[in-house]
Image (tube, rainbow, N blue to C red):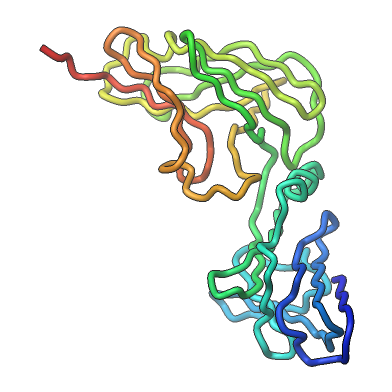
Length: 250
């Protein structure tokens, strides 16, 4: 844990922190506008378990609130910057630790298990094709030809299109027509993956500050006959495709 303070006399809590971030090495950095007598303890929201903030890597998964000598830590920092999230995700890791600010201005940490995936930056749906571009998060760089794979949750077998990895960068394209063949259900949902050498990495967009993408982000729909094909975000911010049979109009 890195604690920094600036200006003035030492006070127990120091008021609101101006910086409260988790660094790439999973250390907590807190800066106050004046010197602080800091002794930070983290308390698990659900269990009440307390841990010192000296080593964040021992924290079990869940939400933790920060306290300094028994008082909640107030902060003006939302806990991240977009460049910082990208830098953090460039390291292979199995746990993500992210600082956040509650609506009441309190500092918290969210710890969750993660696996490598492709962080989607751009999605294009046009001319009978869905294209996706992004970068590997929490995994190692990859090079070589790959596939953009759509896997139906129920019903048809997987379909795929050409893709490639260049280091962390991924690009792939998928024709929508194969997803509409022999559709007997009113609606089929397809999850998207980047596949290389038998390994599938999910496609998702999580390194930003947009919450509830499922209701806020809309992609254009395409049609094959009476079948509507539209990419969308799931409740976990994964990228998927909904293929729906439209009712005929008289």
